[in-house]
Image (cartoon, rainbow, N blue to C red; front, side, top):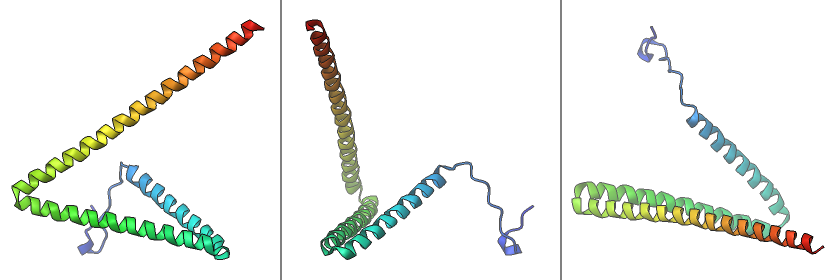
Length: 141
């Protein structure tokens, strides 16, 4: 039997069966570490080259603005949902907006798939034509 914290001992944590979260966290940490290393290398290069330094500063500013915009959007969504809970009309509008956004994403995904299929078909046609030309060239010889 495990004692609780009030009794002076930490509670035993169950072993997690789900390692996906840990793997994602490890990948995220590795990605952040590599980005920081890259930024460090770029800063070293930038110290030598003032033009490069300007580019890095602009990039950092764009990244900051993007993060700020995302944060503002999240806050706005939160406010809208709070308002919508009170106002059923507002809730309907939000639901319709979500649905349109979902449909737009789905349509974009479908278009991407069809575009990829078209490229694959064109590639196959070109390969077939190239094979035919090669066979014709062999026959002529």
